[in-house]
View 1: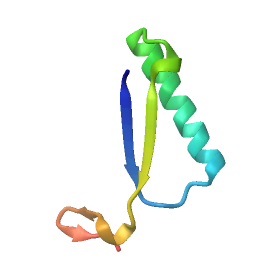
View 2 (view 1 turned 180 degrees about the horizontal axis):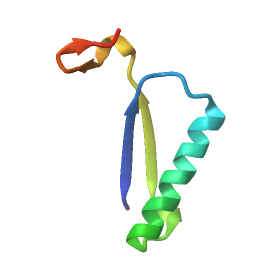
View 3 (view 1 turned 60 degrees about the vertical axis):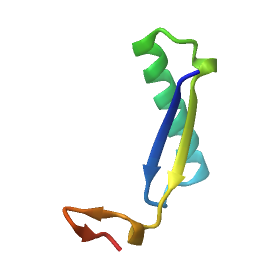
View 4 (view 1 turned 60 degrees about the horizontal axis):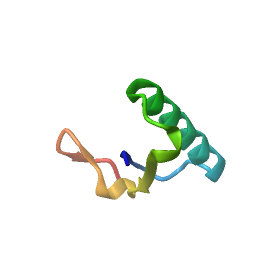
Length: 59
């Protein structure tokens, strides 16, 4: 059972999250030959103040 984890800042609607999950599942299944029904995808929303890029906080 493949598990794909996505971490991102908040902001996508529930519909957009569903589209991302479907697109990632399709891409992985196509590339790996796995059955899409066995692919798990999670989206974790991390507040901007908990991210840093190049040593600088985003928040």
